[in-house]
Amino acid sequence: MQKRKSEDSKDLKNNIVTTVEGTEIQRSKTKRIGGEYFTPNVSVFNIKGKNYRITSPAIAYDYTTGEYRLKEEVPYYGVVGFVDGQPKLGYFSVFKGGPNITITDYNGEVKNYPLLSTKIISEDSEYKEDLSTGNFRIFKEGGKNVKTLKTYSIGILHYNANAQNPLVASVKKHFEKNGLFISKLAEVLGDCLNNYSFGIEFETNNGTIPYYKVFDNGLVPLKDGSLKLASGKYPYEYTTIPLNGKKGIQAILNICEDLSRYCTFDRTCSAHIHFGNIRLDKVYLLAYYQLIRIVQDQMFKLVPHYKVDPVKIANLEKNYCQKLINLAFKDIEKIGTTKNKTLYNKLVNSNYKVLYAFLAGQDPQELSESDAIAPGTSRRNHPQGDSKWNRRNRYYVQNLLPAVFDGGTIESRLHQGTFNADKILGWMFLNISLLWFADKNTLEILSGDLKKITLDEIMESYAKSTSHYEFLSPIFANYLSNRRSVMRSLYSKEDYLGLDEIKIDGINIKGLFLNSTVSKTDELLRNSLMIFNNKGYIQAKSESWKRKLSQDRLVNIDSHFKTIEKNVNIE
Image (cartoon, rainbow, N blue to C red; front, side):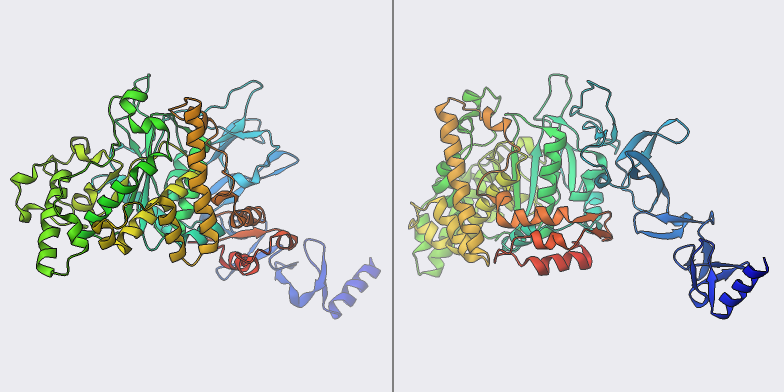
């Protein structure tokens, strides 16, 4: 005993102490509390100017941020990891209402707990996601895991995503605050949008995206009166808020993944896209209408044959996507050739009155030119009422009504139902190319000089206008080639409804966006990071991941990785 005291005395003289965790360390590097020595950030933590022992019931380790915090600031207690396959419970500060996990806890009781992140569940774990709820549990042997139509507990759902729908404002607010991991593919494509905004409507026939995932990507669940199941229930239509830029592209990529995982669609479903930040004047709308008339037969070659006449071929009740008709324009080609300003204005106004009458469902002979309201972003009363079902002339391949009456957008209605991001992105950029081409070639279109223009030429022209021509050009060409080839094959097999393609909708298409070099880079980056919350906390794997990434000249891998390491590239 005398010898140990002597050694202790010697240690103190050398400023060496033994901490409560049994480590010998310099005294200056410890905190002394109640005669005992503690190692800062190991056995004692300074939180808001006060020291707390690791055993203090007032603090807890926050698995979200990776630090000890006051327990009152870490409100969630749930599954934070697995040890030898068994759930480990702990505290965390961020939880978006899901998912939950059903486990047998330390007391042998079966309970539901919040789950820190789906990323902590390995692929070989016995805990699997319930596709009807989005929560995790152990399935009994032989148990079925199916997609199911569930009711959202978020009040009454509306038919439209407009100002009268209170859910829209909530989703917009959440989306603006919510951070998304921006992939390299989204960065590149976000640079190619030419400032156009977009909103997509996805129709489903079964399944439910979990509530906690809906808001993150700017998605609003709606009732769809046009789709009624045999059970009498109405499946959901999921529509996005107006999106733009790289965050908008990323949201679409995420949404397509979620829809593929949790929902289904059939031949009765469609995918509609609204485009905003478009040019809004009379002559542009005339040119755009005429351009669609020129290329619409080519557009129908990219979709299943039943779209030509869904009532006759698919036995549907109504044709919701007719070809634009030949309106009674007079001398419209002279708009593109005349040098006389007075004549130009007269021709624009007289022909726009014809277009306006078509959109308003009225007889142009009964209207004056002053009755024909110019396109714009303000909302106007439609002569046929506010209900969209009463506005008969919205059911065309391109719906121009919103450009005049509903906030200044144009809706593309032709595409069949799909959750495939390659098809959605390809169709989206096809339509953006058309909007851009009509803007840059307005007078040439109206003059009749471009009556033989092709979709290939239009998309190639648009690709050249971007800063990513070498990336976009082959993808655009592959997209058009693939869609035509697939539709010819379906037609040759008399599969006019495109049923065979629905079966393989989840497969990425060779040569398109998700099989590009940029997208493969994203896959490696996703595997190298663990993103836990919208504040940017990440847990990176080893540097060896960077060495595995392609050095393709189109993608500056190193700078992109550093950007992610710095702030997770959160938008």
